[in-house]
Length: 470
Image (tube, rainbow, N blue to C red; front, top):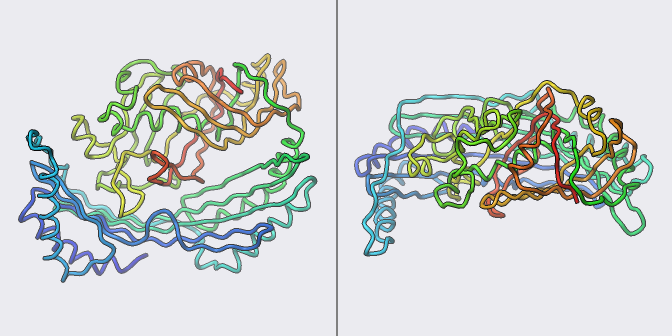
């Protein structure tokens, strides 16, 4: 996949050697991507070949003991090496001169360049591009027509999007090369209750190809049934309730509650309260939180955009906040090891500390046991959006469906929409049961400050906790 990079690799290594004559460390990240999305709705058919990952490009980075600089380009050839070396010298000096005159440059650590060689190929059963536009559009049109037969349905929107990407990271002692493919799909059922519009949504994701589409057609009836539940829903009565979260809601909570709040570039800027709580209980002993690449989902890469090998980072261990996740620069400034979370929206963007696959470990309870244990509360399903305040540890999330539980049984009453709020440690310390089956979903992107979008996944098992709803 993306053979052009194979042809360029010898010249990129020559660039590294040329830069090393002037700098203590030099690296190149080369990226190549193809993306496509297909959509059908009552508005017609749409195709797009423009994604969020930025396409083909290169990031050149240099370090010395007094600073660092980087430069991104969208084309490269061996003939460009002298000009790139000169440009990096200019940029490095410009970074030094940008400091106020009364500030002495602080010593800069050099990134770890211990030897590492890696070659990893994408795994998939069906390449969406080989399947072709016509076949995919025919399939999702058929799914849409099936859903439109359901009661109360005004429209069905069905979509598929996929990304195939290859990244090569080179430094003096590292040669890391990985190809990657993910595919997402979604079904949205739309109905009306008077002038009020209701929507039910189901998303799908796989670290792989169009084989994902096999399961989508079977689920459209479930999405329509959820829509009809929403069309009969009641407004939520605000209060604090015993709740059972389905795995998708658990995933939203883990992402928002302790996702951005433990991105350690926020520790460097003193913008995250979690910095003060390392080593302390912040959750129930039933809660263990992970981020990393030891699960197969859309955000699974063997190395990050700074050439750090990825793995598993245990953020919370049995309720105790152990560490955060960090990029290489933040790790240097904090005196810790990088965790492989340095990620870029594209080759044109800066690397920040970002989540990858973030989830809670499972336990030994079942959803049925959780429901049976509740005298009065709700089963929460279908998260729609969320946001957090890392400085004050607040959380605010939207959930589409709350199913009433009374005396250990679902009553059939449905409430919607739901606002889930609270102080993060209070919510997580209230976790009293954790389900056994962990599920992750990677259908969305995560932004940092309403920008810098990267692909993530999140999840967990069903979880029982006491939560403030409104």
